[in-house]
Length: 420
Image 1 (tube, rainbow, N blue to C red):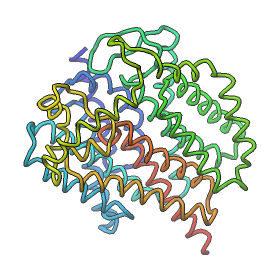
Image 2: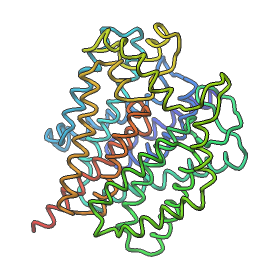
Image 3: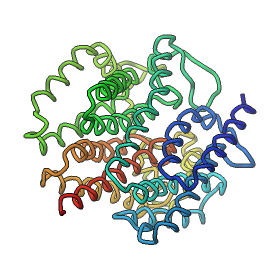
């Protein structure tokens, strides 16, 4: 298994290198192969001292540098990408307090990968069709994770995150090893697929993408991620208020009612679990438990409030001071612990500016086919980042920055076309 995983990583990295000068093709291949490599990443398989999936990231970073050098230095700073640069600066400063430089290096590579996708995608899209082709690849690349997730549901067997073994469970997680991460991945695929559906004129192709969308929604339910359900509902509801005259809210309500009726047992039982007792005899309310855990982290954050304990080392810090290796399920708090309060605020600022950008577009009612789903995504990300870890995920964070870059570029192209 280990040898096979290493060979797959080497082969995949070579394939990516072949498309070093074709950023859109490179990105499309990454979208396909990266989820398939997650089981190996979960068990910590490494190559020459680095996690094997880090090599994919290094190729993406190299491609970004090469292609921006070819296309022009003005692509180095795109919109609010400057915030991510400063975030990386604080992440670098956090090395001063890091207890493990190898972990910190791998973690900073993850943020660099997200920034690289942001710049690479933005600089490579020249027409709206370029943007749509990338969104279609994101949609198509979700098929294998979807099918494997359904296989898990039928067989009742899934991967355990951090272990090569298998176990029975009532939550599917596909290749991710974590149902929560899978739910976030599905949300990103849902947004990409929805934008494609809004643009697609060919009836047969539209039916294909609608079918993918339906499968994504079903998988979202089966992953049983309460946080994603709530954040996604909030995102589309609030975004729908801005675009209510275009999307027709009555159809939105009909779709929600249909989902609620068809999957009422799954949804009801998942929320009922909040009142059940766990093995220790305590109420199984994960959010309440997380809030209590967050309170325990406050004194640790204040030990190094400016540059943190070291990027990626939250589990080491909590193990030392709290006798548990559980990283906080909250990106804002996790970053505050690892790279300091200013770094955490910068990440929030990046997400907030994306929300603000989309609200401005929503007020103008411009290009709703892109901006309605992306505004929903911006709201979703601000909320879900309070209960999950995304920025350190090499599947979900690059997908998010890719979608942001596609939406920015397609809006820019649309405005240019309208001005002529």
